[in-house]
Image 1 (cartoon, rainbow, N blue to C red):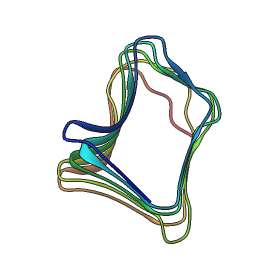
Image 2 (image 1 turned 180 degrees about the vertical axis):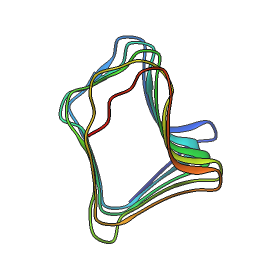
Image 3 (image 1 turned 30 degrees about the vertical axis):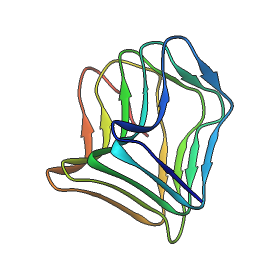
Image 4 (image 1 turned 30 degrees about the horizontal axis):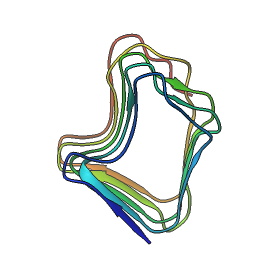
Length: 118
């Protein structure tokens, strides 16, 4: 299936908690997935489909709580017109496992503000 929004495909913010994001279809938006403003994803993001934003595929911002990993499986694509995955504020240590494609017009991965990536 497809999840699409003008600004966000999925937004987890304002102290909301989501168990996990498991995508085998399409998630689309200016930013496809936004996690910030105190939002929490307990079991991470797993993608075997398409996560695509006109600007950013996935933004983790201000501070976030991503308690699982980001897994991009074989055949999975995470892309953004500017950035594939943007780490925009200090958060928890995050691990990315990529067997697919992560693409951004400027950067595939953009880290700032003391992120630790493994």
